[in-house]
Length: 541
Image (cartoon, rainbow, N blue to C red; front, side):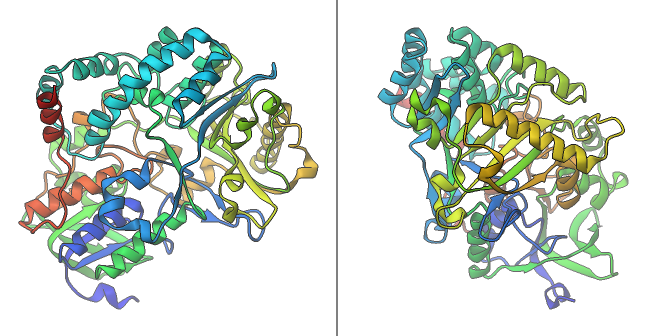
């Protein structure tokens, strides 16, 4: 047994995913004696990179594309650039069509506008107009709010109402993203790629059909200055860099820790009780970065939480879909037939493949929401090793397909493993219609990884929810789950807190500032403030 569990710490953090590592690094650097525990031997959570198909082929089984990571306050504060390298591809989104055309959205405004104009001059003009506004909104509202404790709705709206930019941001955020995209663009292929860009993951509508988007997600579709990046060598390298930072700051990591409960004494959180009978004490705080039901139902217990928190747990919503991941080791990177129209389609970081019409999109969405297998194969992908050659052996390549489906699809009497193989072939058949080189001869090895597997490995992803909480208006911004719990000394710093799931570092970054201030620590960094950002917006106007 680890000797690390035999003494008392200033603080204990539960969960060694990226949130636990970010939170632990800040507080250890602030001088606290921090213990970070995880039930697994591995650390990093969804930052998982493994040789799943063949030696030397590195596959990111969960998290692949990271939004604007190298520009986040925590990446800079923790000096991670010296440990972790991020690649920012010139071409971010690509979509090929069966008529031989393609649409590629890159980082350069003139190039992107010209690409859209080949399909619709009117849509190109619309994009140019919205790009100017969106980049200012992103830089002055969306990003500052993303990494700050949200203001109460009335105060936030009041500050935004003071400026023309703020009023326009509110007007867009109060509308359904799907309606905004359909209203602004006339070309169906343009609409499809913009929905792919707005949604958190791909060619489905869950994220875009919410009645409003308080965080302003639709604005991201028009912004070229921020975007997705690729962690060189594989996503796990971000976890590695964070762990190195945490250990260098004096933190202690203990893996394979089976927690029975969070100890509550005198109404306060004072440590963790282990299943082997031992107790590890925390002098000042306990923080959880795992899902809210494990935290407050399993580890605290319904009998120790207020009724209001119990009701919040009962009403908490998870994303109603899971992912089917097909990971490929290849001789050649996928090459689109549409490269004749735009050769840059081959190098776009994120591909939307399979959906040709809005009707395709709606039909697939409705089937998945009904728990059925979608008839139309449509998935997200990308040329990982083409952009980052370190993820495959020299001259070889990796790619992937992420397809949305129910956690337990209706497959009748078919054996699950044979169904996985059959569905993988359907994905490859669809892929080959767009990329003629995606034949069986090009595939060295393949690995299918579905919700059934990953919910066993990462139990936080309840029901197959990779985000550990639905991104809807009822659960983001001022409606998020919260950082301070009703139990003194117990904090929450996971994906149910603002700014939500995926690899953002936002919840843990904000929680670090809150905990440090509550404990009266001298802050070595300057936490971002939403109030300061929005007041500055008004003053500048």
